[in-house]
Image (cartoon, rainbow, N blue to C red):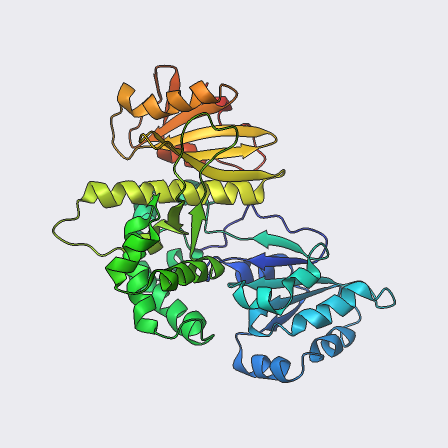
Length: 390
């Protein structure tokens, strides 16, 4: 697969670049900063050398006087290197360097002093491909099947690569870092929580399914978020006028990862899995769009205790958007009822329904847009993402 241009823009100051395995962090950095000094901590020899002597990073930088940028790949492997980076940033007598510190897990870094660098090193994230990054290469049906991880899309056998993806994490992240005592319990948990993808997360139900304790499941969910494999979505409660649910929703970070981990059987309908997969695909796009855009924005959902639900609320200084997702190829007035209820409470918001059809429609004043078209037009800092639906 050819190099795909990404929407991510690197800041001029030093920064952390987090992202799940396979999102193309190293590929992007090597393509954009070919003159930088690279430290690859996935290389056993380099890992061993810097683990034993973190100060070697200072010696490396001083040994390249003409270089202005140093990339440390998978910084969580040797958290002690943060102290060296901190010294470089604070010591004004040392020539200024830009440090780019990549990682696929924030767990060890939080324990080892990321807070020490807060305000001095920016926190950025790289996500799976967005549809608009792929352009003509984007295929909605294929994306729902194998997802949008660059590692998977570039593979000769995407399905096989996807199947080994969870094993890669289990072996190289969970087991190697000693994050859990019982790897079998965690492996069962990965499957069990897939039933909560795009749904309210009830930890007690997941615990019963896994036959392990509730606190253990809570810890496993934290590990999933630390490894950037999944995320929880909070309910939008600002100036709430109705009684709202308290439980968050859960999503795996990529539609393909969800499809791979979700067990399938005679009782599972294609519509059930397909609907959750499409909602997850929209979720990962909105998260990437927020991460790559200027301004402070947050992603939420809205659900009343009476059962009215809007899948996504994007809220920030310059945007207030409610999005409902339907996988069906036909929609009716009943499908936009939750959006209308939300607009009754928040008339300042705008709303749209995304669906599996091919035509732009308008139901009871609500724009209904083909999901694939919406994703293709979702460009960071572009025009208002609803401007072309009104």
